[in-house]
Length: 95
Image 1 (cartoon, rainbow, N blue to C red):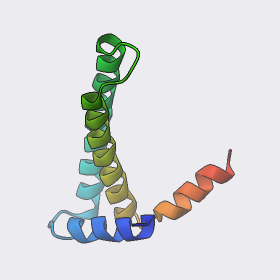
Image 2: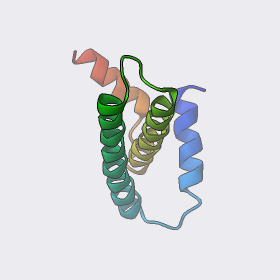
Image 3: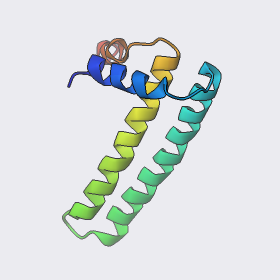
């Protein structure tokens, strides 16, 4: 699946709700902040509980939280008519 298809799928899921564009942006933004905090907790667990190798359990938790953040950011992009591909290209080009 490419980014465009992913963005379309998230848009279809988001359109199932009756939330306004403003509500979608705020809810997704706040959820992104929450999930970022979860990643911080995951990293803290790796720092203090994993020896030299990162445990599979911690990798899976990180994957879940990163996936949730990607969903939320995609939802924000969809609500504001922003292409994820454009954002990624702009990010690469400014480096």
